[in-house]
Length: 396
Image (cartoon, rainbow, N blue to C red):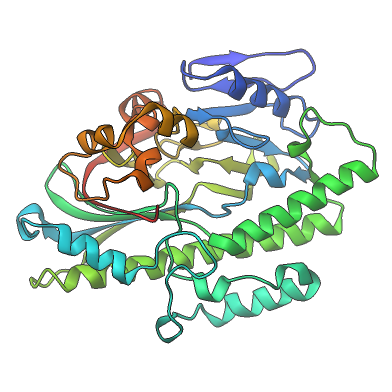
């Protein structure tokens, strides 16, 4: 931990970095004043940066209430990483055909259905489907969703699929995505409900996006149900994409191979009830992953940086959490103004990936230095494997 900030009448703010901008600090201070935030404090991870209402890269433990905007709209977004029984020498010299195969087989990009065609749409399991029907029966405004058509789709922005090599030249597949459009719909729906509740009860907040749902309300119960569904859907979405990606690899690598280790399939935008300091609290990790003693996690860098497979140390000061990635240094708009396609090409040299204007705002310089992020959280996690991508697929 780098800093602890105290303000009268507010919970302390515990920060794991020296690199925090004033706007992010102001958001942390706003959250720390909420009366239902646990007295142990608000936690800022090494990759902390400005978000909507609450910072990305923060952990907020609350008692008897949740803040839907702190969880966000990409509910259940996270990482799945598996190690294969392949080494660097098993990969072809030209990796472009593998990238193009993945881009054909896994629907990419934003929009209601990605590039799914009706004939090849996977079906999510009966339990998920049944639970969604129960949810939409209570909240008809959630009926217009693309949950069925978007299962097994990547999305856009910072979502990715990568083929990586670790320090032993073993091959890994790593992907990053969440609950897609249905998670966005659920998030926005309950954020609006929370805001209307604040208006109805005349509750003044330092930021309207910190509107909350108390646990004695029907909306709270329905939100927890909806968020848990979206988190389970995100798990399934990543599972389906991983199967498609491995199948794409088999089309270009004739040597038989299998999965030797599934590192983790973990969320980094979610809320869950956990016990800390002798109390059951609602722990919101907004751009953070759980890192209890022994927990395996994945902390990715950007398109040209290293990524890390880690084991948690169970540091209670962080509510047993760690950073979820490098964290943005520049917003997407700032990155496009600051850097050029030539910068993107130079910074992703040696990586088989798109190198055009559509992914310019994802270049490594738009993000914080992942090695510095890792150095700042040595008390939170132990590094097991260091990965370097050789193929990166983006939804743009």
